[in-house]
Each structure stands twice: as C-alpha cells, then as structure tokens.
Figure (cartoon, rainbow over the protein chains, first blue to last red):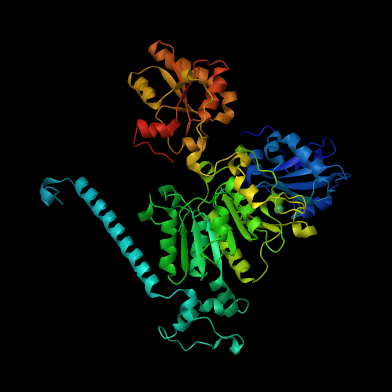
Length: 130
Length: 484
Ligand SMILES: [Zn+2]
C-alpha cells in the first residue's frame, strides 16, 4: 500500500514544530535516513513539546511502511496518547492494536505510562512464522 | 562427441537425462547406506546412561584429569570426554553441565526453519534424549532454510529426515521420532509421557503458526515445563523463554491473538533463510542453558532480531511478579485452566487461523457466474477471444512468474487504477471490434475474488475470477508454469 501521510524530513521538524502537532519525522522502512544526532537535538528549542521516537516491528512495520518515526507530543503525554496519535496517522495499525506489546525504553509498560522527552516507544506485535 | 556412436542413436539430451537419473539413484542409495550405518552405530554404541562402563573402547589419558580433580569425570566415558571436550573445558559449563545435558530430555516441536538448527545443535552437543515432532513432508522450497533436510528426503517425512541427520552427527544420544502433529488432544501425552518413567524437561517451540504457539504454551504451563519459543518471518525474529522459574508465559505477553491478516506465514510473506537459522541457534542455546541451569535464560525478556539493520534488542518485562500477568488466563493468580479445558480448547478457532498450511480454506466470495476455471480460460485464449487478464498479486510476486500478456495491478492499489483497466479493455476490444472481457487472477484464487467483488460493484459487472489462481493454472493447464 502506498503511504497517504506526508513524510517530512528530519530537518523540517524544527521549523514545523510550533505549527502543527501532527508533524512527524519519518524514516522509510529499510532506508538510510536517520534521526538527527543528539547534539543537533540539544541545540534546538523543542519548547514545551517532547519528542518521542516510535519503533515499529514486524507487522507494524508493514502496516506503516516505516521502521521508526519521531513524534512531537505535548508534555505529560502518555503512551496511550502516543498510540492514538499513531492510529490517527496510520489507521491500519488498528489491526494489531489489541495484540501487541508496548515497550518504553526497552521495558514493557502499560499504556498509562507518562512519556518524557527523547523516550523510545516500541510497538511489538507477535511473529508466528518459523 | 558424436552422440550417434553412443547408445545406438540416443541424442545427447537423452544421455544427459539418463546420467541425471542414475546420479539421483546413486544419491538415494548413498543416503540409504548412510542411514543403515547410523542405525548400525546406534546398535553397537551403548546408550547414554550405560556408557560409563565403556571406557576401554577409545582409551584416552584424559579421564579424571579435568578441573584439578574438583569434579571428576564420573559418568562420562572416555569417548564422551573426547567428544565433548570443548564443553568440558568451559569453566562455566564443565563436566557438571555436560552431565546435566546428557541426562536431560528436550522436545523440539517442528522440524522446519527453526527446528533444523535446534535439533542439529542439541543432537551434536549431547542432549541425552531428543524428541522431534512433525507430520509434514520435506518440500524443495523448504531447503533454503530448513538446513537439516537433504535433497534426497524431498517428499519424505521431515521427522525421519531430521532424525537421520541427527543420528549421523551423534549416534550416542536417544532420538524419539513423533510422526504426528502436536495438537491439544495429544500434546499432554507426548510432552509428559515419553518412555514410561522419563518425561521431557524442556520444550522448544519451533512451529510456524499462531494456534500451535498458544497450544504449546498452555500445555507447558499445565505441565510446568519451561518453553523456549522462537519465531521468524521476513527479516525479523523473536525469542523468549516462557514459564521458567515463575516467569511469564506466552499468554501473559499476548493475551489476545492478532487477527488473521496480521499473522502471516513464510509461505505468504517470505523469509530470508538465515533468519530462522539465527533464531533457531539462539533457541538451542537457551534450551541448553535451561536444561543445565547455566547462566541467565531469556525469561521475562524478549529478544528482537532485525536482520535488515543488523540489530538485536532485548525488551524486559516489568519487574513486578517477574513479568507475569496476574490476569493471565492460564498462569495468572486466579487461572482455572485445567487439562480438561486444554484438551477441549479450539486453538484454530481462538486464533482464527489453521495449524497447517495444507488445511488453509479456499474462500468463496463471488457467485459461480462470476468465476471461470483455468481450463475454460485456456479455451478462450486459444479461440483468441478479446480479453484482459488482470493479475492482482503484489508487484514482487508478478516478477517471479506470470501468465504471458497479463496486466499487473496489485489489489492494494486497484481502487486507484480503474481507468487503467478501462483503457486496457478498450484497447483489447478495438483490435477485434468486439467487446473485451475481464478476467482476474492471483496466486491461489482468494485475492482475485476480492478484486472481482470490488470490480463488480465499481463499473465492471462482468469481471470474472480465475478459480484457484496460478496454482490451478500450473496444475490443470500449463505443467511447466513455475509455482512458488
Ligand atoms: Zn501467563
């Protein structure tokens, strides 16, 4: 399936951050584009927003066409808020929503967990092949 | 060379074919010899527990000289000490680890991509008793990843092939062939009632489908067996040790199975051969660790392998309850799941997917009037009836093989491509001056029906589905058509 949501380059995030909360920096699946380095991120003003990196695995990767995406979220956002934003951008993720685990910074968490700046949220559906 | 001289006028093609046939025969005979030799070895070599008396067969000065006499070589025969010497030399493993391994029984469920390295490693490293369950046959398209099977075993039982390969590597271990599919009705028996007194200590899930994963998990929870669960698809793999020392089980992690569309098989989505190989090797490693109580098994954690980026991540469960879910229906605090419940549980219904590829149902989405058999379609082609054959498989499938003249518009973008179909039909009609008809084909005949359903309702009321897809085309019309 072709992607319907616009893909922004990582660089564009800074300038668009204040304009829209839907702004996202995305890396194409298998692509080489990488997130900005930490040093770049420290330099820029994220303001009240926090940046959360979302990692997609297995079927989530297929459904979004991405391996990861960077989301700008209001402070005090929870993993659930992050999920609803993702479902908004990628309605197809609904398919695995009830059968995946969420891992925050490599630890399983409930959806109510409050996120902090530069957190890494992984969406892990089960694989069954072999 | 003048082929006329050889064999009274046979063409070089004939000779080549004859050579090929004889080579195949030769290979078959060689394999049979190997098998018999392995059987002979099995008969002459005493089994693992009786081997201690057998020290004079290959006398070696190494006996009892390991680890400064701290742990003696008691229980290990001289040839075992020699065979497993590199294990014995490991301070963290040593004689103790090897003895535990020799006394353990491990069941490997599935002799496929994951099960191949698991069984090979467990056999070669000296697991006392290795059980293999599988009811599938070896197919040529298995060999790129199921490295335990050789060409000579294509069309034969996987469990036989796997056991023969293991025997060829290590004739001193006990191998048990379970020539059946593991199901809720037989799983408790197979796992718990191996040889009169002995039971399997560890179970390795090397299956390829979701219902089996839930079933094996529940069986292990009920019988209190640790479960080494691995999975691989495409370029990704997952690995976890379930239900070990009070740790979480598969259901704690995934209480709700994903919908059918989300659980794909290697036969649909593809898999890079080495990926299940990597996960299978790690499964063998975890099985050895659990069986010998060496190291820290991957319990309460999940290993994610991403071949594309060469990355391995390990995700931890919450520390509370060692990651077990108190609400888990099989291992939770108030779980009331009995062996009776287990045997009556319909895992295929629960996961909405079949345990075996062979039983995948053929859909019937469109009326008979909107369908055509591959033979009928062939007749239309021979009569030069103006038509367009629309192939709705993904583009990378179309590249593998396609019926000549067919047009590829993947189902996923069909909606946007209706004008293209319209144009193709008009062009096909113009040549003959007649109205061109529209036929739709896919790999197995399911997606083509979905496409016809959509087309019928969106301006193409006469579009027809080619029943059974390319598989039936290959079977009933063109035997040389490549299937995959
Ligand atoms: Zn559980």
